[in-house]
Amino acid sequence: MEPDSRATVLYVDDEELARKYFARLVTPRYRVLTAASVDDALALLDECGGGIDVLVTDYRMPGRPGSELLPEVERQHPHIVCMLVTAYADKQVLLELINAGSLFRLLEKPLATAQLLGALELAVQAGRARAARRLGLSAIDESLAFLEHELNTPLAAVANFARGIERRASSLHGDEAAIAEAAALMHDNARYCLAVLASFVDTVRLAGSGPGVPPRRTGTGTGTGTGAGTSARQLLAGLLDGYPMTPQQRACITVAQAGDFTIAESPHCVSLILSSVLGHALRALEHHAGPAIVLTLAERRISVRGNTDGGADGARAGDLLRDPLASSGRQEPGWNLIFCKRMMQSFGGTIEVATEHGSSTTVTLNFPVPIRNEHD
Image 1: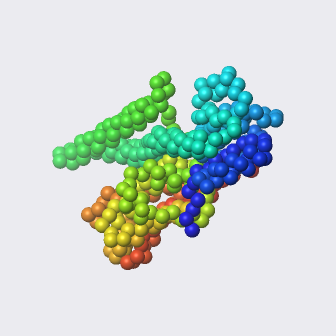
Image 2: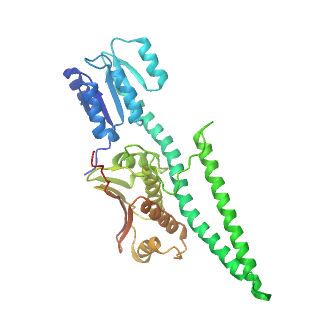
């Protein structure tokens, strides 16, 4: 069954008839959740905020006004685009919200159908553009942290090993003395590579952090940098929206959704991994007479299945994940898969490749079960 790919809108209004009217008007195009107050909305956001794309809230409500909800959403769920509905415009409050960046659009009651649907469409587009920008910056940061860890460790080991060889060989004479010289050169080259890597990482981080913000050191882990994480459904939708494909390529891709879950660890890196796997599948099927790619979302896993011709090429797909020295004439995709495997392993995940000879190849990303705090 084709999944519900519509964007999700949360509508907040204390009037039950207004909530029913909004849901009836918007549901054909969007998934709709409703709340009767600011507190109800915050509770709903705590439960499923990662899956909400747009928030529309009434301004005047008993208890707390809708204007108090927007800063909370901006702080806890920055991916959500917010709109305010009011018949009693308080210009000072609205100016403060707009200047703070918490408000995307102001809608006046009674809601006009064309105005509302047009504003929602623009809000969804703005949210996707905002997510794409965050994805690019976060992906760079997470990838740099991963590369820094992956390269620093072996380079430091090479440098230390070479220094040890140099010291032991320093007392040798004649032709054997060349061993000490080679070891010294190896040591210097390794140290040089370490210095270049550190300079490159700091330069890229400084460029991405804006004026006056120092480069951030992340140590040996990748970190999440994402707060509560990202819905797997949203991540797949963003991938299909942003990946450069021809209409023919997009037409051969279908999505099967058997569940959803939150990707709490490095979701931007996961998006890069899926982009790499999807790109590999598209290239592999480039000359296929009837290409078909199925993206399946299930509990704690995402799989990409392509109807490859199988045979020797299909058998090699699994080998390339395990053997970095495999030579098939198409080494680049293999190295991409190895890199993806290491990135998944960095936060406890795995990648599996299964080939049905003469039929299909499936690459599955398995995600670890999140460890919950006992006080959660």
